[in-house]
Length: 134
Image (cartoon, rainbow, N blue to C red; front, side, top):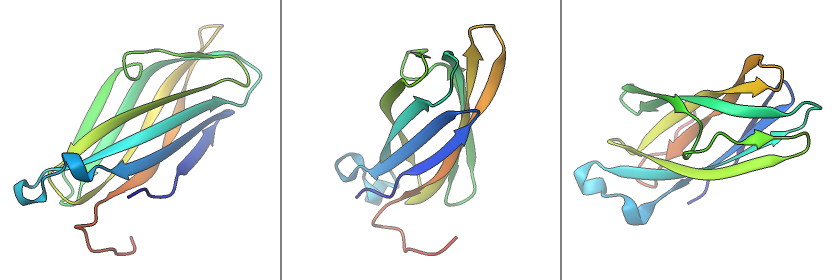
């Protein structure tokens, strides 16, 4: 079950996220729900940048917050020249049938200056969660 993609652009860096519920890895009877999320980072600017760090805020349906910080993504710190993009897929489990993720990447320009790029908030919904408008 795929939801719509979510996108945000910060200082010419566009981040698009596509979450997908993983039925085969989830065990609702044990309160274990798993999602994959595919991320595409596009450099739409005129300056080469490198992704240095990530920061995620993952909130389950009961409002419990988990924060994840660390270098790079999926073991890489990709360099994006103007017009280039980097894609990866990762995942997250939750103890509830829905949740939300939001975050940021710390990018570095060739001159050493760093800036934050927003990762758009995206909804994690399983077929076991009653749909409701937030």
